[in-house]
Image (cartoon, rainbow, N blue to C red; front, side, top):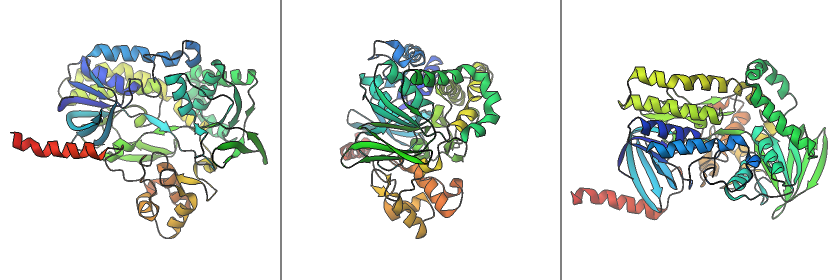
Length: 468
């Protein structure tokens, strides 16, 4: 890696690959950084070298990523895989580690394309061995061809049904699907249905997944009102409340999922403004029409700003790149606008479906804010819900004060698994909006960094003036 680039893109999912490709094709010195061993992100993970020979298992949407990767490889963009970005400053200085060596880079323009992550699902027992996310189960299937048979899928959202359907097509036994979608969500989503019908193909795809699971005889229990994951040293059962009655399924594996949210840590640590979205119950980056944030020269493309799906992310990656190319004088405004126009049209079509999905699969309050005081909220620091509520009662008004009260959000994951839960819990306890409570203040390093790497980086920086 060199010390300076025209455009640096962080994240090699659909948005990041598209952005780096466009930047390099138009003559910019473009660098794509990603901590995974190969490009693709979560949605196209391992698509360049699939582990499954039957393409029907993961479906045609997955293999569309091969075209993006081929385009990236032909563009001339420099792609550094296995590179962890642990800092991004407002001065566009990037801290990155690769192969045990840390270094600082600078760029004229930076595009953050860190994508989305699964929403926390803090129910009783969610930290037990044997419990993982549906996205995690899909990672194993895509990257290693591994799967856990006889698992219970629990939660709501299209990804839950997609992964279950992929398991079905792979011939992997599914114990049951516990659908926690609130019964009232259908009425809330109804006003958005006319716009969503313009994307009828996507709607029918989801209905087909569910129909195929039902036709295969997979128990599909709708309207689940509560969940408890039971076990001492590992998961042994899941208990669920359905129509006011508790039932039990003995199992050693449960896959949880209740939607995806933007991965905001790097952008927040860089000082980019965010606002609370009540529609998606998460933080959205504040960006302009070219995806640039309030930090000059820093843009956020794809689901890392707001969740809209893979194709929308790809379009936003291209739009972000055209904007960055203009800002660093590689494109004039007229050409920039003309090149971006087709992708804006596709983006508008993709966004028509989102309000319906957000309303239809809005997770219930009890699955976002744990009612059981013993439920762990912060997995890293093992902070239970009771301590969060006690801290608020003692005068803690926001998540940043909560750090001092309980160490919540100070673990290795840097609040990825508890940040949203903490803000919602404090807001509910205080009787105010989440926007008023705010988010955890994130600081570098946003990813774990070996002390030896940091020490070597400091020594190198100190030695530079002497070498001159």
